[in-house]
Structures are given as C-alpha cells and as structure tokens.
Image (tube, rainbow, N blue to C red; front, side, top):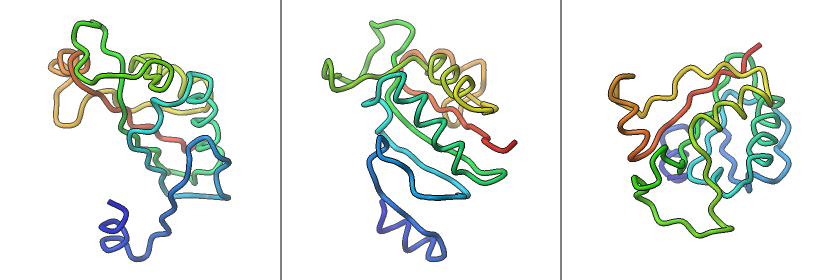
Length: 135
C-alpha cells in the first residue's frame, strides 16, 4: 500500500509509525490510519484524536478504517483476541473524537451506503467516520 501511495503521490511525505508514539511535527494535510486503532484503549483512542487534531492543518482530514463492536454481539464477523484487540462501538469512537478535540464528525455511514441502510451494515460489518479537525 505504501509503495503504491508513493507512486501515486510523489509530492506527498508519507510516514509509517506506531499510533501510540508521539506524532512528528505538523501541520499535516491529512492523517490515515488503517486497522490500528482497535489495539488502543478508549483513553488511547481519545489521546490519538487529540494528538492528530493538534498536528493537522486547517481543513485537514483524519481518515481511519478499523474494527468496531457491532450493536448485536451475534453479528461479530471478525474473530478478536481478548486483551490484544480492543475495538469500540462506532458511537463511542465518535464521542471520543468529539470530546478530545473540536472535531466535527461528518459521517458515520459505511462507504457507499445511505443513512437508512447503514444501520444494518454497521451492526453486521464495519463503519467509518470522517472527521474535520479544522477550527
């Protein structure tokens, strides 16, 4: 993924690091996290939101895709390792992003779904939230 990103975005500075580590100095136009946040406690997620918000430039985006806890535990489709995987419900992630920053969460719908169909997919599958960290 990083190799392709470097090819498609030669003008971008791309950096890979542990989400728990201190972020490099910004400002950044965007931050992307894929399948990493579910290894953080809720306090760690809140801390990450605050650290990203402090380093992202006006109009910047924090885009992340991750494992969530569905409303109905019977709908879990991904096996989790207790103590290692610490996913949260989408509502908790949105609340954490709002309370740890001045974030405006623009959407909590899975990609390519309408709000009416998203509830069913969020419970069964996955979700995303787009966050705008601009003042």
